[in-house]
Amino acid sequence: MATPAEFTPAVPSRETLLERARAMIPVLKSRSEAATAARALPKETIRDMQEAGFFRVLQPRRYGGYEHDPQVFFDIQMALAEGCMSTAWVYGVVGVHPFQLGLFDAKAQADVWSRNDATLISSSYQPVGKVERVEGGFRISGRWGFSSGCDHCDWVFLGSLIPPLEPGGPPEMRTFLLPRSDYEIVHDWNVFGLQATGSHGIVVNNAFVPEHRTHKAVDGFLCKNPGQAQNTAPIFRLPWAQVFVRAVSTSAIGALQGGLNAFTGIAAKRVSTNTGKSSKLDPFALNAAARTQSAIYEMKTVLMKSFDEMMATLRAGKEIPVPDRIRYRFESSQVVRRCAALCDELMPLLGGRAIYMDSPLVRYWLDMNAARAHVANDPAIIGTSLGALYVGENVQEFFV
Image (tube, rainbow, N blue to C red; front, side):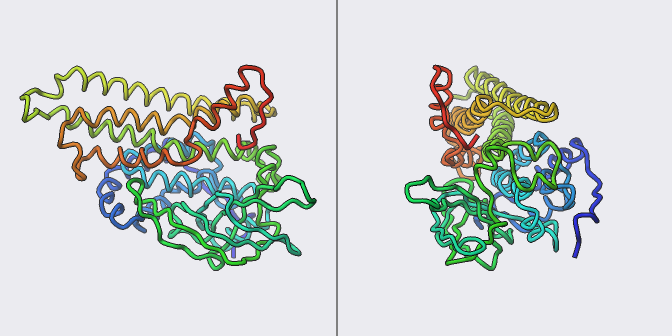
């Protein structure tokens, strides 16, 4: 059994990690069809990402992690998405969990990582469970959906509301950490996009969760988490919500790049059988390609600039202002719908062939449209708060 003091990991550079991610793109493309049919990523893909060190990017150094800034994590995610958005989605969701576990009590970190620092965690943060306070912790039951990559994970994070201590008081939102022995996976993932994410259901029947295996949402908001006593790197002072919302939107940027690459590759050679015209001479196709690439550069720039600002603020010993946090979350919430709309514009410009399931563009299109369903990717929810802030209203937002 290893202890945190034994770890002195060699940390690969941002450039090295991105090079490894880009090298995986053709492999992921070759596995995409089989992964879609299986409704799960192949074990080989998870193994490849583990061997490349991708899941360690946001993991505490004391447990073999790299503690890179989030920009590195999102660089990797976007590159993976060029090959397979389902892979990048699972990487985003599962790969962000070492960061959250680093915010938990040190005992919880040891529970997961002391025997194997490569242990993976899936999640479902829907507040749908039934929770009862008991001595030393809680009893939890319920059924959660959308646990991406759960077949490859040995632990799970589950969100739920705890009843108030006093009658009439507000409930408390927490994340509960459970081992694989305490839950059942229900294979119910039958969807039109992001099929290979294997985002199945999780069922728990009266499992005991000790107090130290819970994470208070208010701690994540205030950036005053138990794990910061041991994990002192600047990234662990980031608001949990800021990292999570980008983990479920950023794969769409890389997928749009993959879709655009497929589009331009076809357009460069395509001649319509109906009109006899070449797509590379079609002004509508050319302008659509230009708008799409420009939008990709813009969304990447905003993503990186946001985290550059946050990390600079933290390194200066300051707190990130809540109004900025609301704006950052709004920026993230727009990404998937923008990407899906841009890809939707490309589809008809390739004619009837583009609608076949073996079209190199259709998988990206379906996956981006499926990703719109995540609650964090609905700009109307957080946009109302941001707009209210601009007109001088008092805004109460906690998941920012």
